[in-house]
Length: 142
Image (cartoon, rainbow, N blue to C red; front, side, top):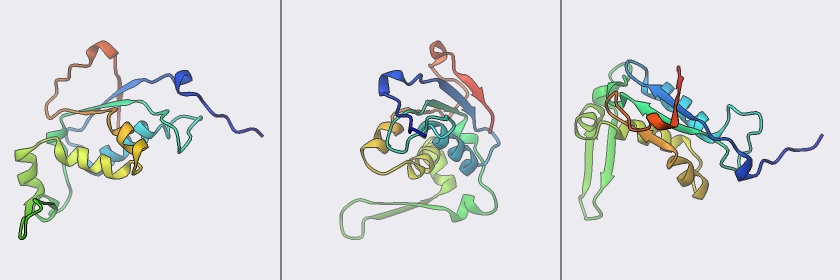
């Protein structure tokens, strides 16, 4: 049996919209990462960009289970001595509502040039509005 390799120009890319309101952060991120990689297509190849575009709306309303709202920490370093900055999930959602969703999805994509390219196919919005109506996105349920 021959392996099928699809050329980048032969790939038909669709747009999907995922509503994250009331849904677990991780499950929504997994569904988005699978669509971005193209794992839902029969011609999936781990080294090629054959995935689709994903729009996530209501990212600020995604839920985390248990005590993760206060226990889950996001850390960054300024580069100076003693420059570690920490904040909880709830503080991060108040400051940057889309960041936890983007951070979760980015961690599920491959590292390197392919992962950086796939991440550009993701659009995350804190509210229910998005400017991609012209692409006629398909509703995707998690």
